Length: 114
Image 1: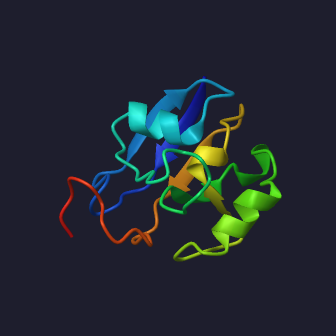
Image 2: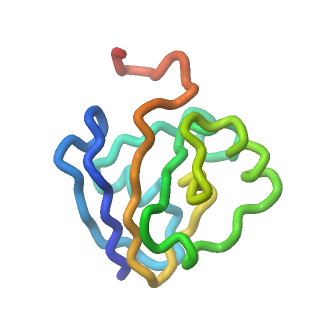
């Protein structure tokens, strides 16, 4: 199991959290399974940027982003050199520390109020 730590985020994870995920598991699905309600407006098909995360630790353990993910990341709010789309990332064996950006480009988040 791999330790995934999520830094505090005012709306999605005010206290931050930490959990164990299976190596090889989809990062977006692991976050959702552990109570981090990360947006995924395109249903994890790499067609939006709402599951954008910044990998503060463990970035090099992830497989490189493919061209489609790189193109989509170019549209993400708050893009950094350590940005990834959670829906396109697989947990490896190295612990991860994630920051959830303050904003997404999603104009209408279902079931949520701004």
